[in-house]
Length: 128
Image 1 (tube, rainbow, N blue to C red):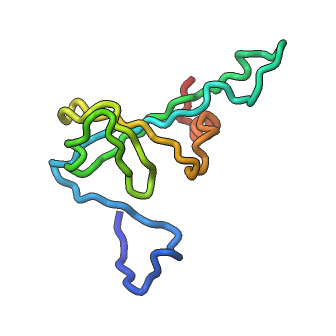
Image 2 (cartoon, rainbow, N blue to C red):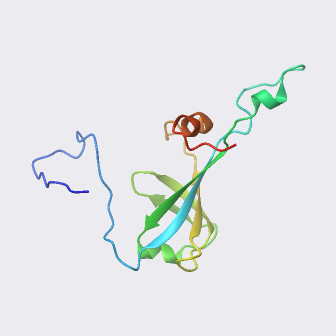
Image 3 (cartoon, one colour):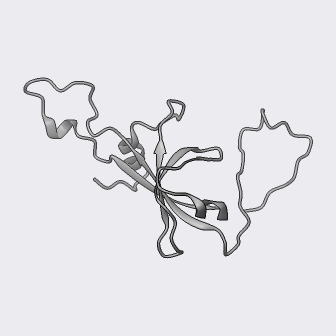
């Protein structure tokens, strides 16, 4: 990817923003897990089809590359991922072949968090 520096630009009015990391061997891999509701209707009434009310996808895992400081995360720590979300560390990073695990913390501001199954299936990456 290439970009062009535009010093006269305004950060608040810029529609697309890029967060980047230098490519170094010290970067660490993490998996960010995003969860959705198990049932996609607000209420199940007597006689409703339970299986039809289940979400087809309730978890989406995304592989992230992070800065070396993420190596110090311990399970239970909360971290803010720039321009993305807050996440809780579920499993600490151990080595390149044993990435850490983060769980997205819903804050009510993330648009499109719910309806995860519909987004994943529409993108062709869904698995039940």
